[in-house]
Length: 236
Image (cartoon, rainbow, N blue to C red; front, side, top):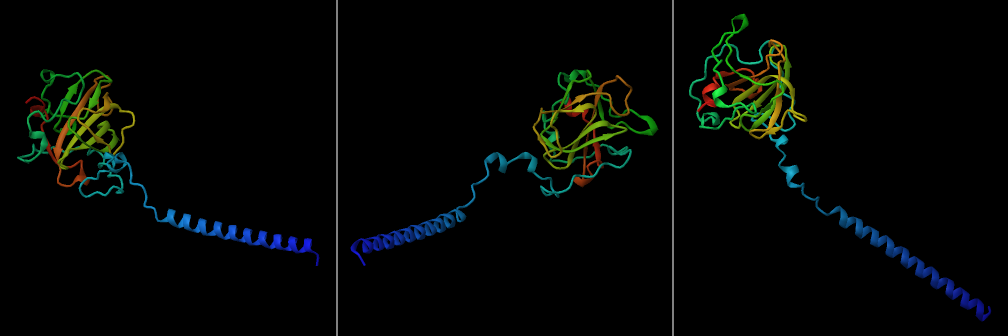
């Protein structure tokens, strides 16, 4: 064998060894890289995702619980219930805790309609706040929107649960809901939740907010409880 042929064989052998070493290095590098990535802990969720008010459950509810049932037909609110007795501690009894839930209405403009009679022998058990059609309706107190419901009697309605998880605030005869309003939203006090209208069992054009308050023993039966007159709470 000539000297030149020997040199060619040596070069080919060296090239093969070098290429095998490079291939082995790449295999080892990839194994180590992906093993480290699989052991890296997941990044924590941003604060806004961890503390979203929409994920805050009511007592007796989990964040993934189904929507609350709708009230029985014709039973949007407690029927002819007597005014609740002492139920301290309830936030609404603190002086100035509630705000008038219609923008632009002053305390002296309110009229106590709680004890007025209604059709079919019903008691009113609520406060009618007369206002211009389309006036913004706001949350009277901080609390979760637990039900958005349209009924023959109340029209477009909102049920809100107070921070004590036993006091329900009911807003009825709305023209429409505020844009983006959803069940589960934790509404701050003063947040717009809808607009004054004349939907439901109302004389067309007689725009007003039907505002009622009652306490419940079972938050899942949010339509059934003991009525409270809102009038003195809005005129401390």
